[in-house]
Amino acid sequence: MKNSRIAKPKKKTESSEISPNPMQQELAGLIEETKEKAKEAKQNTQTIGKKIQSVIDEADLTLALLANIDPQYYEGLKDIWNSTYDQVSRINANLGQTMLSTTSASSTASISSTIISGAYINDGFRNVDEPEFKSAWVKFVFFANRPELRNEVTQLFKEYGFDKPQVVGDKSPLEHFEIAHEGFQNPIIESNPVSTSLIPMRECINSIIASLLKMRPTQEVTKNERAKIMSIGMQLKKDTLPQAAIDELADEWYSINNDFSNFKKKDVERTDWLARLNRGTSFLYSLLNGLDSTKLRK
Image (cartoon, rainbow, N blue to C red; front, side, top):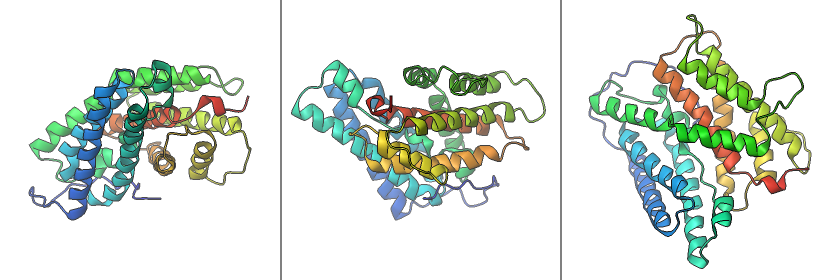
């Protein structure tokens, strides 16, 4: 797994002056290039303008946090942003050949959220007491929790039939998803309320993964959580989605699943709780948005 582990929260003691290392500078350059590509694409199409704008916004927010992100996450972030760069470049290439129609643009455009990375949780940062960091972090969390993303995920659920129970007697993935967010907005217990939110989110994702495995045209054995996402992606991804995007989704689901499991018996601050809830939501968006529903086994 590529640099997706979650470090234990700890107070950072190093100087507030953080000297950028070469990989940080390279990553910043990549994010800037991706942002410029996204701006170029946005000028050429209105159909997928919201998806493109999200790339631009995520780039700005990440650049503001980059100096505070623990260097152990740089390689994983570089992989994610390389994948996003490729996705935006393909959109530009398609627009350059022939102007995409409204329907074809929306169906072929696949832009993964970069917020799936474990770097975007409070444990992944250093020098967290700096005023500049706190300001940038609040903006990031606000953006990641935007209602539009939740609405898009809800719509994707309905398109795939995940608004209905996948197993007789169980809640639908959409119900688990709504319970997860409602559990954050209105905690129903005082002792460890996080479990009432992150556990339903994990159950939601597990239910969807189990259903997508059954929808693969070719049934094959998957030995672990990462292998499940790899198999789903290889068989069901949109042709325009780079394989690297599936690799990252597989790595991040392994990380998210382990991270959520650790909160069964411990409390966490609400900002950290929300960051993890946003991460699960972004993962679902990236996964379902990157699949081609016409490839599902009928």
